Length: 218
Ligand SMILES: [Zn+2]
Image 1: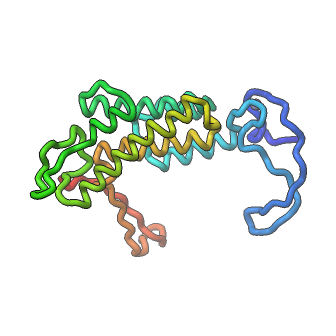
Image 2: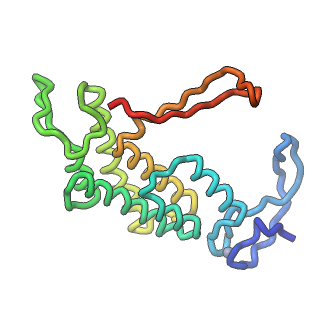
């Protein structure tokens, strides 16, 4: 009999499992059943997996603009969650740049800039800059993120639109995490978040004290 946390929330009757060699958490091995992380019949996350996923997203600091996508993945609506993540990034780019174009074209126009190769002077500033474009390294970063965003719409989104990719939970988690990375970058937050590890024993807990600070250098 399966434990409730590994049973399908939609009540699907699951196929029989075979005993396989597996590693236990204490490092020993034995023959036992593997549990399903999601239902092999309807694709829903098992209650156990849903709890783990919620814990993961809490730690990950997913961008607030992706809250609808995250709620959809919790409901096991994976394809809708991925589509929502693409839309969230697109809307964010539109709002921040003031442009009314879409996808690949939007990313190109929002982040591109022109520079005088002789003097290094910016001839046309980008509508959205992820840094001050002060030197070649920063300009390369701006170009690199533009290429990634152009690819994000032309690659992964088209794979979803054309149904050329499995819309299971793993691919959708990847899309949401990538979208969150872009959104934090467009906010300028990845440049100003620092975590300090202070390796002194803490008086209260006799362990390592970890203090996280977030501040702006602008
Ligand atoms: Zn099911």
